[in-house]
Image (cartoon, rainbow, N blue to C red; front, top):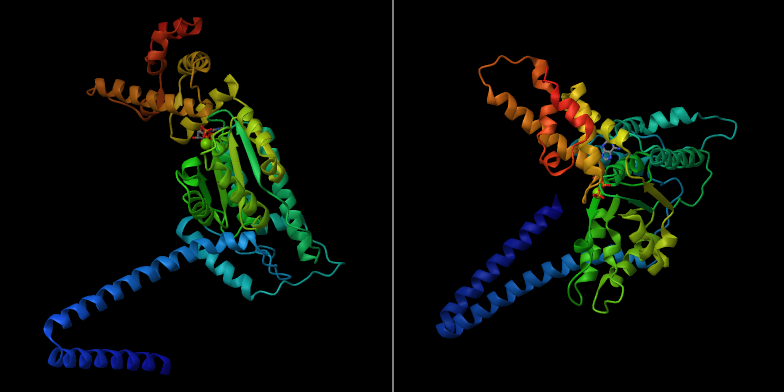
Length: 419
Ligand SMILES: Nc1ncnc2c1ncn2[C@@H]1O[C@H](COP(=O)(O)OP(=O)(O)OP(=O)(O)O)[C@@H](O)[C@H]1O
Ligand SMILES: [Mg+2]
């Protein structure tokens, strides 16, 4: 209260003094000199304001990497983010609100160490961490991918056990969770990176958001450009997951003018020193990632988990298509499914085939053709089922069939009239 009054008193005094100075100067100084002095004061004032602002921004950006490079702040006993079962965070706005209160609650909460005779069930802890819906969302969204899902379960189990151990006062260094996802396009790498939320709920990460970056977000084009660019991206990702797609483009072997190595050096430092604040996931084609790791052994040694996303088989692609349609209240008639299999058989052998993404794209085009077919006969009455069912004709109209040799089943299904 008194501080506020003092602040206003100071400002008022300053304004009064300035006014008196202006009146005196106006009365006693030649007006030309007054204009010069006034102009100089104005320029100085503006330069100070701009300079101060720029200095503040540089300071903010630079502060975290400095911390990364230097001493890692020690975690106070019991101050580990998540260790006690917390309230369930919500997505979006509510989530960030929830996170704030969680952070406040954490700060004020004293972790009670359990007595060695007490017991805890992992199922209760799992429920308290509220991770079931992350798994069910991964399960619902992703058909197959059994080895990848198993690896995610393993990581979650490690964090869960770690969390319970902490409740008994058993502390261990935090596990390294930097990962590498390798696989062809459209095999689900970016979708699985949503496990960022899982890491948040299990208390490994403070925020659990996902920042998607590529070479252009990290590497600059001239001297002095790369470090601030990399640091800005790292800053955005702190507390969450930094997902670097096609990570091998960071490094251009043999190009002495490339600044990728500078970015990699900063990344290496942060991956080591700030690994309890940030998880880095590198993604890309397997063979190119292998070459990248050979040229950057430091990076390879910081990656704890390698997840390989195998290309999908035909049956899996069909199942993925079915699941995608199901989510949008469409389905394939029996003939349409046969035609879709034929479509995929042809498409898989073509360049730029992108697994589940190609499935999604083709189904979107199929919906378009379905809509166009219905709209072509506007006077006909349509049932709910008509609006949901995709027919063989909607798939066979794809230009791919005109380009390729006919497949036996295509002819078969084309001959049958739509229901
Ligand atoms: N197993 C799956 N089941 C269902 N949908 C899937 C599956 N795998 C991928 N998808 C879907 O395919 C699309 C592409 O997946 P995603 O972007 O995760 O692939 P990616 O491996 O990151 O591809 P890229 O390497 O081209 O970036 C998404 O819509 C995703 O939901
Ligand atoms: Mg991707």
